[in-house]
Image 1 (cartoon, each protein chain N blue to C red):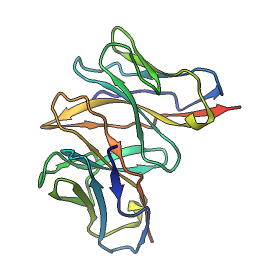
Image 2: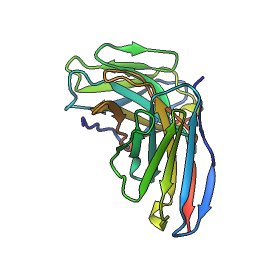
Image 3: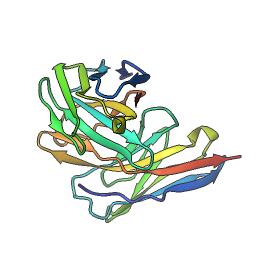
Image 4: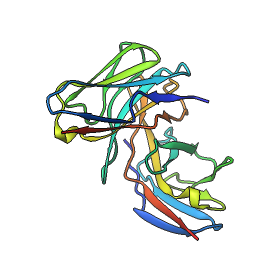
Length: 112
Length: 115
């Protein structure tokens, strides 16, 4: 399985962009990068995913480097409600199913 | 919206009891998963299932079993609960496909305490 490395915690001022980095240097060519977040006492919530191109949706943008060894999740205008643990995950395959292996993530604290 | 429902939000059981955690999804997803989450350890995969009556071990299957008799329901069973199984248990589901790019939908979790 490809492993990911994230900083344990980050702070961001409300209204500013939050840039969350992730290293996945052993990623294989057909493995997608997923981002989830978990707000306290809730199940993880899907944010975005990508293979090699940059992606954007209503929640965030995902920037993947050309060599695919790292990526950055961007929350363009962070709010207090974005305070959560953010997980960067590389999907792996086993037999007929794929699975997501979660690490310990980055705890993002958005402050006034 | 896809909905994954876990039967209990909080559960307290005694050591040695047989415990059933139930999970139901309403979007006809093939894949279902059980994770446990502990402070400092993140989410760890216990078991998953890619079809009815099919199951595969995850990273920490010891002390657990699962049952998938119907596509929409995936049960986690603690045969004889122990205090080290006190944890938050999360169920998830997703569509199937070897080269899929489908995300997971998670339930809200069951916080199990074994005393």
